[in-house]
Length: 600
Image (cartoon, rainbow, N blue to C red):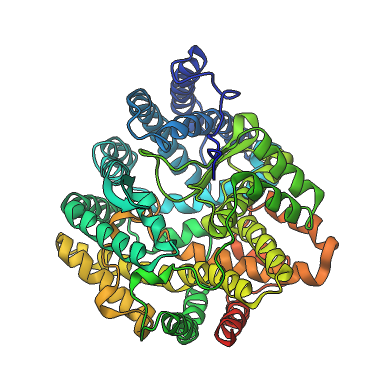
């Protein structure tokens, strides 16, 4: 790939980190938060459940309008700062501004706590109050949800203290994990020369065509995490201990209770899905063993889990990836294609691998300009093309909410529904290429790419769920050593991958580098991915049945994912997410791919 993949451009948001506009907007968020606090203390608090409904409605509307305005600016500023931090963790100016902005956000969070508790006092009157319309009525779902969740708040004083302490507590641990993992590089012999590879580039070698390179990369990676395991175990203990302590004080039944509420699903739904996933493990193990046999092995060592199989000459320059995605998005709708074209043309995508850049991929909204930005680590593989399609799907989801003029509170989509468009876009691109191949060797390579992703979202996600569940339970009693964390991870992989993985070569350091474990505000950052993928597969099946008629309903769904529980949104398409059969049907689509893979 001679041409360097692009870096993203946010110059239409702010001209630079040192710009007067950015400084002014940060100051505005700080002042607006202080003003909201004043309004809350001097005006809103005086409105009580005994006040007339009209008065309550207007008071809630005032709070909602002010909060939306602050969130619009704050989320945009946060995205702008993150655009520097995630692509260059050494950027001292960005680190400094981020630290200052964190303090501003704490100011907003402190006011929020009071507002949430205040809304909770109207819980029994809300239906009649919100029926009166205005901004309060337009935000019926988020307002009702906030009021219901307020039962889990500590006293206002305690919540404010927890928010202030988080900067030196959970947030600090989370930042440390990000810094430690993104700044580690390993000297590695690649293509006959010693190269200094950042960890994401080393991890990406899992997909290298040469098994010798894959094995050496695995060994180098394991050695690197061995060196870093103590500070990373401290980060894990700090964050999980923090969450446990707050859950105890907030009367949450366990560590899973809040993530379920955040995902807008109930335990019955989670259990139906997890049961269907567990029942699919024998099928996935059949795939792992069939793949191992291709390498003359009984079971897969970790370094062959992501290995390409079949004809793997399918590589893409960034421009080829762009054309391929645009062409196939056009089969769904002109609008989707045009949206993606705009993202490429306006440099919304940061694709180059480089030192100091975080691994993986994500898409973030930039609401003040009604745009999104996508980060990936493009290496020319089909997998990375699928990743770009996936992340552009998130961007298209944001586009639909912006297009429908949804406010920030109306846009707050749970992780379970956040994958709706990304899975659709990924599936469109994958199926298009699968239908176009005639060479069985090429078909095998494509199925391999898909099954690597499928097995990660079903089998590996389940292992992460088991790992996190046990970490939370054991952290209640004591801190966990790095070796104990490795042992829990090993056990979780054995329970899920089973005989499909070589027991001598699992990856018991997976807990070190996955940022998902290191978010105090979002525990069990795993099962929503499985929900999203299986829900997306179910929706794709409906799209294939209905064709173009499906698109308007789908767009309505995307624009309203922040305004109803998952079960209600799914019911619009005749889907019952509490029924194990729905999940099993989606898993059956993957099982067919595995059958075909084993035939080839």
